[in-house]
Image (tube, rainbow, N blue to C red; front, side, top):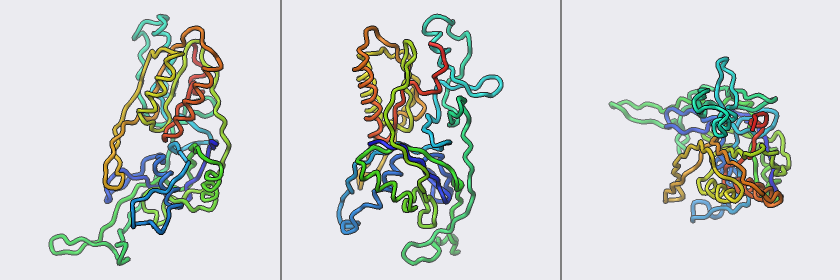
Length: 327
């Protein structure tokens, strides 16, 4: 089962990537953070701190990005560009026109880059506005329950952190895949406000509550006449990206890749793991070959979408932002 879940942060949200003394939240909730928060609720207390063990779960999460009207959105696409009026528009048709020889390369200047994250709402691309919450937080010694201190120049100073968090009241939407019973358990936890994510959870930060959960059916949007557009949502493991291209080569030739790769390090107990990810908003443009077997083609696309959810990211084909562009 795949479900689309929308939550609201009832308290300030701090997903920090900076130091302890100055913490500024990023503007989305990574899939690893969501999964870790869920696993912390089902962990076997008898084994905690006694042996290396990981709670087992069938659930896989995508990243949770700010959303409106409970809809999934590719938050940033490399084919988006601002026109002279400052409006954000899709320039994919310019790339296709150049590929097909209808326009000379460089005839229309397009600055293709992933800018601020965006919503696709009511047929238009709009910039996301995330409100911030500023605070100073005193650090408390977890054992003594007193203010943590440090000695400098024979003076004892209390430690505090400057925090820029996301204000309460933002909606975040993500997809979760797994067994129905476990998804229901996750929904129950979110309904009861039992899941907190990010930093400063003991101070009440990061409480998520369920707004809506809908069963998702994987559908492939009608393709353009000769092209397929593959968009990356969230951070997709590079291995899943290459698997998708391998599965598509029977039907398509790759024409344009506007893809950003990021290396990430994570600590698994006492060992560091280094993995490469394709960043959100990356785009691959593929041209259709002749004599495609429709049934096999549609089945293959659906398999790619479902398998991408397993790894934290999500692949979209022919996202609606490209819908009105010519082929």
